[in-house]
Image 1 (cartoon, one colour):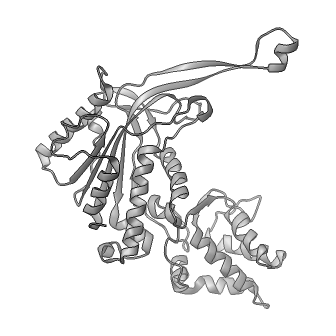
Image 2: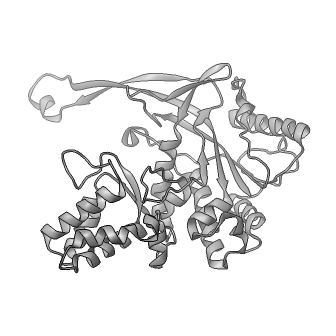
Image 3: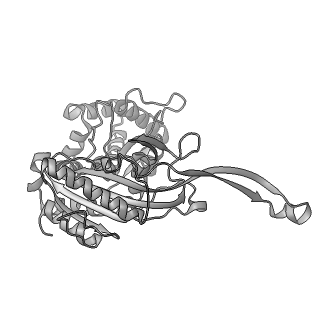
Length: 385
């Protein structure tokens, strides 16, 4: 069962996502180059919002996880500092083989995502091993070899399996090469957003005035610079593998997702409702202070069903030549393209749309306020709340 989320969002002058040269990210698509926003950028802003609104364990993505999370908490629990450092350093080596920073044995050489439940378990593990007066590090090695050396299995045996990698890991996945850490496959798949029309940017030249300089010397800028700005109407696309999401949230087998307890399915429903809200309302953007790049989606199309997901990006394979009402034009093209796909393959999804524009071209799709559309989409996935 999949949930597909299509959005159309217009941004005024902004620099939503920069490349290594400080320019707006772009991509060639169809017959024109487009401005784009990377999936990594989008997910970062959505994660931040989900942290704010969801009452579920989060995650910590950091090179300093063992130093500033595990060691800090172990010391606060009263473990001797020398012993605590030896144990945490040994823990890092066992969990992330070859991932140790060469200059600091308590840091990773790149950020790794750990869930808050994993942090809690690891802190309790180090504390327990520290109480072994003979050889705490040997005790740690023996404990980590239990359950075939799998951290998730160790946590499950300790009753801490739910959301082991945090809600971020459950949604967006965690790739690890460790033999002990459990890999978490992404249940939420995010495409790069792109403009439905050709790239259009300009360079904004700006100056900075020195207030004290003006008071005592001749007028003139104390600093001058420039940045690329662009305005655009972006198509966004997100797919959620619902059984996998429920599996990642609860630890169940994905094929058994529908038979999970009501509270588990409610958690999944809450996550999806908040995710859709974040996709529709949370704006990415560099240069916040000078561009205020805050916008909301003007069209949100939700689809639920068992069929193979497919993007509607090809509605804009031929870049739109904007005229009249650009947003209405984009919604119409989306509807016409969807109709053509239905004509070839048939309609295999239930659809719900919310839009500030007319939706006549989205034939047979009931239009409603976003909360109502989301509720109906959730009911089609989980049954009536």
